[in-house]
Image 1 (cartoon, rainbow, N blue to C red):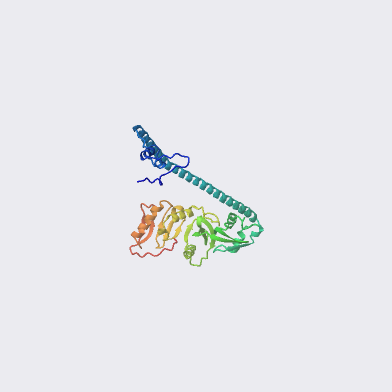
Image 2 (cartoon, rainbow, N blue to C red):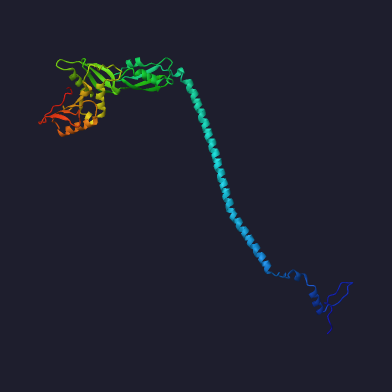
Length: 362
């Protein structure tokens, strides 16, 4: 059969045509691989030696250690940063607080200075000059008496008035214990008097006169008694004391000479008041009157008519215990009890129990 050469490859003009045999093609292919085979040709694996593996392991271990150390340091840095932030916040807060306090202090100081200057200006200003004084009269102190005692100089204001000086002037009346003041701006001063309380009424041997004895043993005022025919000064004084709910002291010696506004320094009066202030309310509520002819002869009359000889003001608590015990032991029977020596008291009593109430006058 004739060979078909129409499909054979031909070379371009000027080149030598040499047909390739199959063997030659194969040889050429082995010598010059195509570009596709180069591209996909696998790289040869490098052989790993023991020393290389050791170095690689060491590097890996070192890397892990470094990573671990870095991770360990990270929380410390975070904590340090948090502490620094907290410290900065506290520092800032303190600065703000200090600035606030300083500002408030400066404002308050400014206000205080301004108020002080205003007060100094106004305290002597005629705007608040006292032109009207109102006084509440008491039982024993009249409005006229108080007005005479008040010493308010012209030009005195409600802001510069001297309360202690006014009180001192008012206390020249022995009935005045103290006073309170109310400023009614712009020009009115209101005064309230607190009276001294009466602790006893004292009758003198010099005549029908009863003296009011007030707190702190201050003589207050004399009261001339009207003694009708058939009565005694002591009886009238008792009626007066009973009606006013006051303690009566009778039979004081002639040496007792009261002066209004002075303190009673007489030993007899002081002895009576020492008993009265030491006795309990259980006993004082039963005492009608004291007899005080001398310090050693102090005695009392009780509401049930029993007369009790006390003597000088010693062992007062022991004497009271004996009095109360005897009253309970012989209710309604005692007429006289002597406790000058409380360890060995003496007494008189009646067995009938018919004991009349005492008059309070021995």
